[in-house]
Length: 313
Image 1 (cartoon, rainbow, N blue to C red):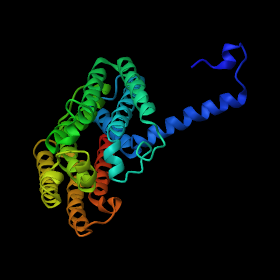
Image 2 (image 1 turned 180 degrees about the horizontal axis):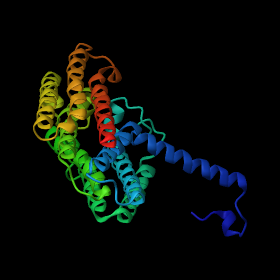
Image 3 (image 1 turned 90 degrees about the horizontal axis):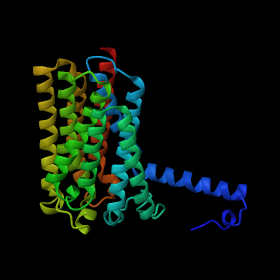
């Protein structure tokens, strides 16, 4: 629509400009909130761990920062898209995120995802070809998770595959941003954390969302086989990832033990929380997400530990 003041050759008033500025700022804030700030930060940590895991310092720190900025845009794009496509399920689950509560229009959020995808690709192209390739992969995985025809979120198996890819590409993009090759510690730790996302995070997230997932027609393990089976599988997977991560680090990359040990501790915490949450019965959604919080805190602890280890090394 053409602004009447501009059409008549009259400049918009300062008040009108201020209101527009507030609207843009508020929309940006709501989109940032919808895309889960805690998840955005852990993805940036993964990228940073990948960068520092390289055998040499980044060839161009400026281009590395451009790569990290492109990664942040890609992450926000993927998770904002997820919010756009999850409105029905999120409302059924009692989500308090901006789209579900009606503060952020779906059409506006969808438009922002397009802008963010363009920004991610543009910034990645300025970093290097390796980062650009991983950004393309990440955006495709984000689309495959949320949107037709794949909609991996509707199946625990497909979700696990995509979640592994989202984690692995984050570390790989960081390594590519450094521009100096791969190390055993970087590969072992990156694979361990990608498996933690795929085999633990994807399962414990569903434990608190089973009701809304059923309403949305999803066929997750929690919906199809029940919460008891999903809890048992989450416990088994947490233990397996922890044992495999420590064993791989001992065998091939002892430096990666700095991150594998927090994962092992976190696995015990997840097991305890799954058992405790199972006794809460029909408690509120947020009271039943203790296992997911344990999963998330473990991610932070492991990545921060490896970030410090690589920086010191």
